Length: 114
Length: 112
Image (cartoon, rainbow over all chains, first blue to last red; front, side, top):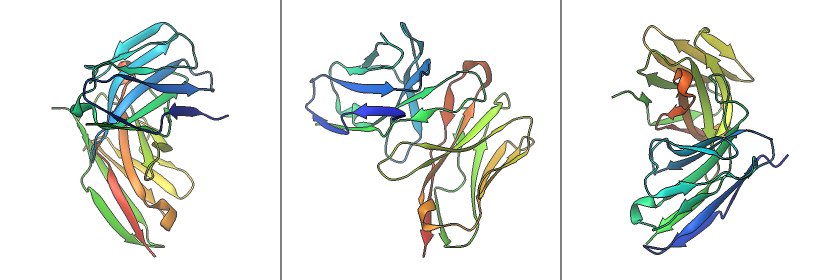
């Protein structure tokens, strides 16, 4: 299994541009998550999904949108990029959302907004 | 506010020594804790976890200790190797919500 894969690895955006960060998992996990990690900080939850067609906001959802049309894919959309969205973005998945379940992370997408 | 934090942001150890990385949490309702390792340019990688009904769990060269009385979590790495150099995060699961809350991380540097 490839696990959790993310594309692109790195992207530079101009202020106001939009882009989609792709995330795919091949573990048949129902639960998927998007985090951002700012320098020297822990991960903050942006959005999560408990299954195809179901998404919900995390701690820092403003400026982002998500969709979950399939079990495998969970893209993250930035509509109007701002410098505050410069960060490293991690996608994760898990087979359960209950306590006692670890999440598996992708390699990350580094985004720079200028 | 409630948070998961780390006592030491950086830790430097000699190869072969044991490492201890600490983490404090503030929510007594948290019932599941995970340690992740993050190497430079990579995503977090699961190391070991522990439930709140335990106070110790051992893996391969790693041990996690949980002290619920003082809300403290530690990760012990035996015979630290250069490959252990990374940032280590603790995370807590706050019961029914199911979302992990991450600490800021401790950078472990292993000197040869």
